[in-house]
Image 1 (spheres, rainbow, N blue to C red):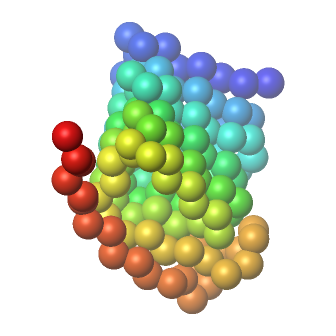
Image 2: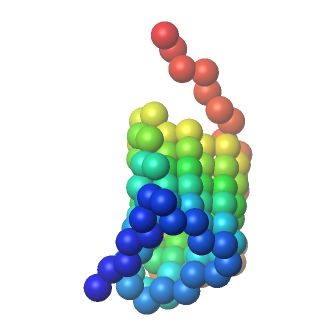
Length: 126
């Protein structure tokens, strides 16, 4: 099963899900994915703290983002905040401002002695 938040929909509050969620609209508040994957579509906008298993971001996200397995920022992603996971993928073209915390063990909780890496924006060559 999966849930889709449409482009014209704005949700303010807390989302708790045990199935895949795709966000085309806007979410403000908190997202907790107990199971399943979260996908923020290219036009999706999330201003929330996010906890999940697998997160793929094509759109805009601001907040504390943690995944027990993997976070992927695609080439269209625009992310501000702290991202925490054992596997973090930043594709060429992704925009990220914040801190990366990488856990040592796959599936480990985000609070287990993360390695902090500061990331500075890089000017794109013309």
